[in-house]
Length: 366
Ligand SMILES: Cc1ncc(COP(=O)(O)O)c(C=O)c1O
Image 1 (tube, rainbow, N blue to C red):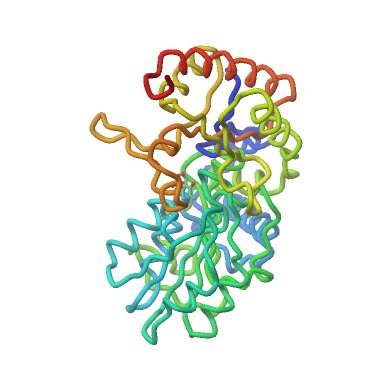
Image 2: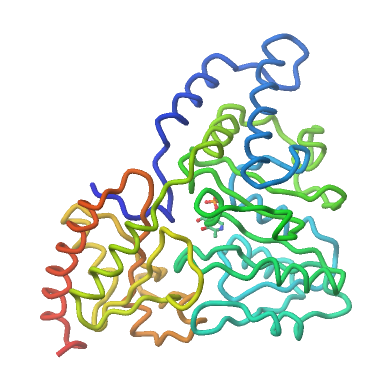
């Protein structure tokens, strides 16, 4: 299988798997235990904390381990004080549904390239705004938001700033100090660590209400015995060199645009992560194209969400003003470690054939 869906999840890197297996078998002690085995596990957790801190440019005490991106986002959104929250229309459901559950919120629109305008944030801020949450990089388009500028505006108004960095960490350099954020979420499985482990950066001095009650783990910010092997693997993945995906993504985009007519890249006018390309193929149903490619041995994704048998256009593309038909004809390609130029060329050849075949069958493309 040629895997082009690294924004959904990534395979574990061999170096990371080695750490996971070793810690799983040899460091089974409880990090809160006083004996040597407990302390050995504690060392693994603290080593990983330093590795994650190095990835994010923060201090180790500012790293709170969680069960993944969703929990980190929930901790940030629900941990913030009572009051009004501002988020963007293109957030992942882990943020969007949490904010909706809290209530008392405003949604920021995005422009055609998927960017939040700083002036929109200025206009939405209220005296009772306590939190602004705008993602760093989008999962469907890879579009990178002007987080530093937005965080500065939020701070002028006295609000905390959270950014969902799940699609950014491990793909682009992240420096939470330079970004000026108070809270930043990451998830291991998006950068070659296992599923079910992630972290929230909590800037020193920021008070978050507890979401989960129990022991005094993670400086009383996240109760529960630590997932020691997962955390050690997260640290190992954080220490891997960043994969160089830009040339592969650019090759894929250039070949598709040159060889397949009526195609368009979404978010092309904005800064994007170097691994993501969201392309519409006019006149097609994206899910039919995903299935055709799957049968040909290529894993890609549609941005559209399927519910009760009906395909809805992607809310992210819709927020960018993409018409419903075009949004439903859009595919997300996300490259990562292990992809080769040869695989990209084979993917484009398979795409060309599948698109031509499906367009012939499609009444919408008569
Ligand atoms: C932008 C973004 N935020 C949050 C999440 C949720 O992370 P997790 O799957 O680790 O809960 C994802 C993953 O799908 C994501 O892409």
